[in-house]
Image 1 (tube, helix red, strand yellow):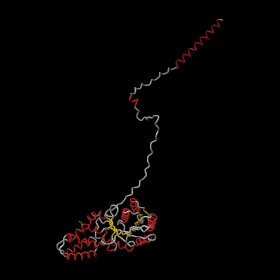
Image 2 (cartoon, helix red, strand yellow; image 1 turned 90 degrees about the horizontal axis):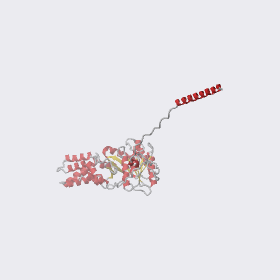
Image 3 (cartoon, helix red, strand yellow; image 1 turned 60 degrees about the vertical axis):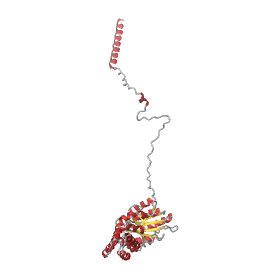
Length: 392
């Protein structure tokens, strides 16, 4: 019995010791949970900031909707406005002052010589030299001097007014005050008038073509331009610019193409559109190249299969003097020139070229270029021209 009680006590002691060890073991491995971290207290927001929206905030209410940003507009090139040129009437009168500034040496020199008390042979030689230097030409100069000497002998004493009247009369006689200088651009029923523009490179031929188109449109005509100078790409582009400015259609062909074909197409387009005038700009022919001159004749013949060439304008640079005269004579042999457009008359040109070129070619000066502006091409008026030479 005692042994049985002893065994129970031993077992109880073992259980107690084992439970106590386990309790100590688990208590040593346990760590206490860290205390919770309190966030820092934010300072109170002032009343005005609570009411005002923060920067960058989007204010929305029930009526607010999200609108996408507008798309960037596509830039469409705008054609330049079409210009309305002034009419050709009165242009030379408006440009008279410019002409007088460049040509007054001739008129004033002659007036001074003729106003001398004694007109001996030396003075008459000076008068003759002055006229020849001004590109009047030998034959017209001799005719003028002979007539002046006769009139001076009849008059005897001469007042400045009489001298001026005498000189004006002789200049008008040589220029041809009564010559018909009408530009033939009248429409033939349904067929437009055709103007062929010819000349050597550098005379201002393409520019003159563009200015002529402006002048005709300013007078109320509808115009088609033919860019038959296919050997110089810049010529077609230049003519296109002139046409775009005034609303004239330009017919052009491939670079190096057949000029006669372009001229024919231009006339056909003019007839189709029922315009008033077709102006054909040709290549600047060098008068020494026979082949090119022959081609100019071909252009004219091809046009005449479709319509009549009403006007053949030869563009001459007034500053080239007698060299320009030789060029003009060669052109006259190839095509039937009907009129002359004398360019650069406001610069260093000698005014007498008007007299000599008409005498040599037997055709009148119909247009004169008196500046670089788009409206500086004017119908030639002999009276205004002579008054500008002699001054007021």
